Image 1 (cartoon, rainbow, N blue to C red):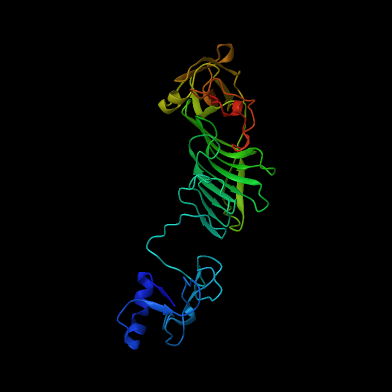
Image 2 (image 1 turned 45 degrees about the vertical axis):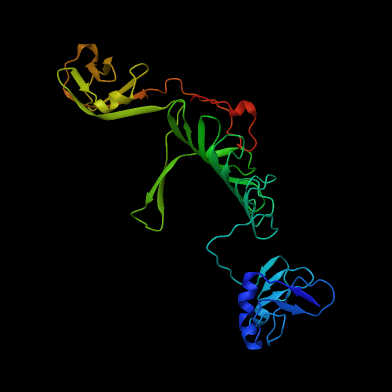
Length: 326
């Protein structure tokens, strides 16, 4: 005959049975031969079994696995239904839909959902990655994947001083559109195959009006307007907000007379603060004209037109990881 001490939860559960049977000691006596370290549940009062929990709580004799709502537990604790707890401390590796590894050196404390092999700190089915230093950049990043595993969106560092929010092209090799911030130059930029603005079509609310941006090999600013030529002379003062962002070097000005009697016009003086216009051949005409000024933005005089592709950070080379000042 074997005598076994029960853990506290079992003693408490057995208390009704003990009272019913007139037992005074929190022990369960089992006459089965050999060591029997586990205890079953029973729907009827049975000495040595838990009651009245019935099959809602089942303990497998051979393995010691505990089943709640199942008589065929497949793990140390198998709950057939929802479970709720204030705190859960998991110290092992579970090959289930939720895999939490707490302090295990082989996985570095990573959390996986629908994967038993999380690649980064937080890995959902190897489709959404989020974690610290995922690609050797010592930062936190996030990447999503298409169902076939191809890389989709990425948010995080691209190099030691560059950060990207972008979407990969169809092969998942390069980032083809998005936003980039350069920490060294303190500059940010948007990039895409084409940049648009769109707004609701007032003539047909079911459609949008989509205009594409004018592109060019420089980062430029412009102003335009209409002025008055008086006795062949005009001076146009440019607003301070333009002077603050534009450089005078390389600035261009176009003028268009709005009089058929004009002898033509010339820009005889131009800075990022003002322009001076005269009529050709010392003309003394008085009429309106349209004007437009274009200038390179301050800080972008050395704008790069040809640049390396933005290879996915997961595939980048050591050279591509070096900071590139725009």
